[in-house]
Length: 395
Image (tube, rainbow, N blue to C red; front, side, top):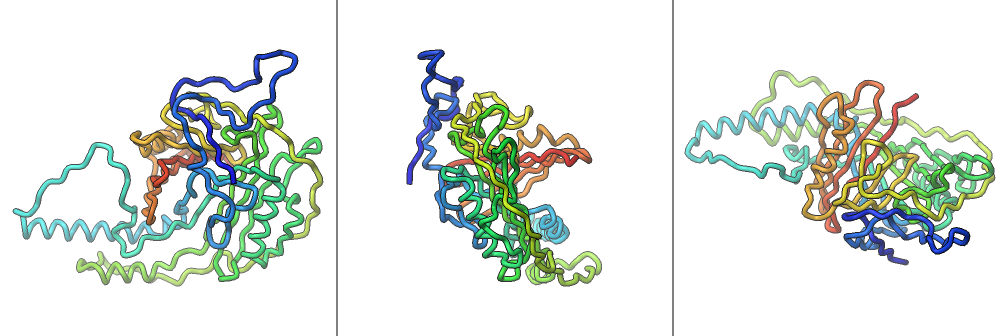
């Protein structure tokens, strides 16, 4: 296993290009070279190698390197299911706090908070058990053969959801081709696992820009891959409401409607129809797209800050994984990226408190028909990270 040491952002930017030694015989580009000088970042400290768990039985495939932490989020349906019980928990807490303050006024002391505190408490900390994040994404640099890495992901999915009847050897059926070259791959399947859990798995490969002949920014001249697993079964809210009633003395406001048992989603697994593989070659783009400090991160509203280092990015899907200098309010940075698109309201926030990490996800509130934009700020032992995601409006 190798460790990469690269120079990344945080000071003056310099353009990456071919050597000026000779206009006729330029020197070969260094795939590990970046576009910045200044703070020296040991990229190896932010890499996770093959075999590392992603979610359920999925792991980082051979020939790839995970950049930054896993991005763990709660989906919109999960948040919507828990919203009523959280609102009720807050109502009861407010009543109990007011009652206690009235009974013991001398014990009430004002509390002060810093002007911009970092998120530390889980959004659902008032509940006996906060819902586990149901969406996990791994952002990967492909150091080996992209087809073999993609085939391994399909093999893992085939083992996890055998009802799909996936053939790992036919991985190229999920890829697109232009002029004899693979331009990208997308696997997007839904089914029930061997443990009867509803899941959706999305895996993508982005070799780079076919027009500019450049690999994605931060990829060290390599393709990039994403692997996302979403647990799709709706939560059973009956025990959650029961736990709230048992743990609080304040009664419910009115009659709580009867909650039915959730239905599995999907109910069954439908095998994928047969499709032939597609023969092509992988393009070789040894130079990554340069991104200087102040340069764009996939969209013209996102700029790379001088206090941040780009670890990895992709165009299909559009994402950027960023390391933020310690001491910088990375939560405010993440929110600022989302604010650039949240033109129809304040961004929504969800905080996930894990054993060793705290992840805060902001979603932009965009007009109807607008893009889907989010940023996840992860406080981890290795550093402070931001994962940006942008999905354009559906056509």
